[in-house]
Structure formats: C-alpha cells, structure tokens
Image (cartoon, rainbow, N blue to C red; front, side):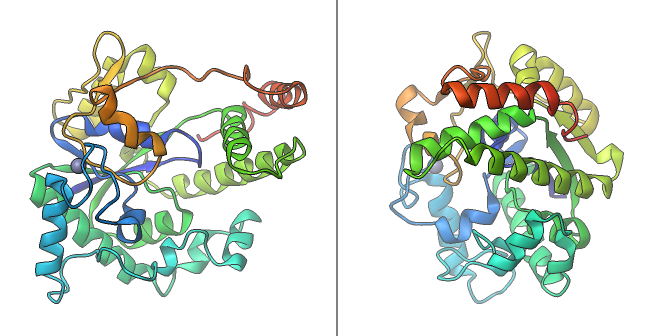
Length: 310
Ligand SMILES: [Zn+2]
C-alpha cells in the first residue's frame, strides 16, 4: 500500500534537499513539492535529470497517463490547470494569509474543501506509488492549509519528518533571499522575517501536536552531514525496512534517477555537476552586513532555544 513521507518543515528550512536525501533510497520516491506540480508543470521546464519535462522519461510518461485518464476522474492531479486549487494558492488569499500570520489555526479554512482535496492527494500518491513501485512517496510541500487538510482527511498511512532548523538560520535564509530578489530590502525587515518565522514555527508545532508520536521523526541537515548512517538507522526503525541513502564518504549526495521540478532554482544546475550535490553546513552569518550580524547574533543567543520545532 502507498505510504507518504511528508516533510513538516518551516519555510526556508532546506526541505528540497532533505526530500532529495530521502528520495535517494531505492524504495522511496521523492516528487518534490506536490502542491506545486499541477500549476508549475510546463513542458519546457527543466527536470532535475536535466531534460525538459516533455523529454524526461519520468514526467513525460506521467503526463501521458494523466491525459489518457483525464475523464476517468481517478487520478488526483491535472497538469497545467489554469487555476490553482484554493488550498494550494500561492500566496493564499490575503485574509487567509493574514489570519495564519496572526496565529489562527489553518483548520478553520479547510473545513469544506478538505475532504475533496485529500481524496485527490491520496489518488495521486497511490498513482505515483504504483507507477514507480515504491512503497513510500516523499512530499515536500510546505503549506499550512495543505497539512491541515491532509492530516484531517487523508486515508493513507502518513509519516512525518520534522525538519529542525534554528530560528536564526531561518531568518538568515529569508534575508539572503530578500537581498537577492528585492531592491526595497533593508535591515528593518529582519524584524518582520523574525516574526514570520516564529509564527510559522508556532503553527507547525500546533499541527505536530495532533500527530501520533510514532509517526514522527525529527532530523536536521547538520545531523545528516555529520552522520548519515544515523538517519538510515532511524528510517529503518521507523519504516520497518532497510534504508540506504546515496551519500558517499565525501558527503556528496547522488541524485541520479530522481526527477523533481518544483522548489529551488539550483535543481536546474544539478545535472551539470554530474548529478551530485555536496552536503555542507550552513555558513552562519558571515555574508551579512554589520547590523544584520548583530541582529542575527541576538536572535541566536536569546531566541533560538525558545522557538523551535519540538
Ligand atoms: Zn526528469
């Protein structure tokens, strides 16, 4: 039977990479952020394997299957839909986003749409599991409404990988991204990023409390880098079968055979690097300006231990 490994992760926590690490095991298939598959599917987009989606052996076949069964209604997702499902909207409707950022529970917004959404979710996971022959399918979607809809309505066996990343590192990732993309960025935004990261952690902790303890493992990228056998060992105990991650002695993750197209931009360059990615620890606060360094150090010293995923 199809089983799901869902990454319960704050924004900017490195979940794309952790999904790929899990997906390197022969019996686990990682399809990236499932919530973005429908709308981001574009024949000319690049897959992790280096091919365009229409030339990729994995996605082109799935796309053909979907076209064949479009009217059967049993398939789950539809590629290239002009409109995103409400639960997957990115960004969500303004007032929902505001409410979530004020700490209101996501379950208030999925009551009517949750069951139908979870049926499509389950159908897609079953399909991928059958298509690949993998018992486990990794979903690295990070969306509070989706988590809530699936947790409350899915009929599948779902295991949760909680990704532990320090608050200061989450804020640092948001700063890096804003500096790259937005001309209006100033160090004042660090306070907003701090607030958003804290409320994100609060919401995830609330969801996590509703889960069965035995269905959760908590991991961090640093732990995997230090000792990936440790993760294999926990996976074996948790999943009840042998786990082998494709990480070599130089801490390089072999990505050959994985096909994802949602998530980070660096996935487009992986194939140029012989399908490998070096796992390395975060560089800390070295690349920031003086004020940002002070801000991040204060967060690290005073808040990292108070606000974390438990
Ligand atoms: Zn591919």
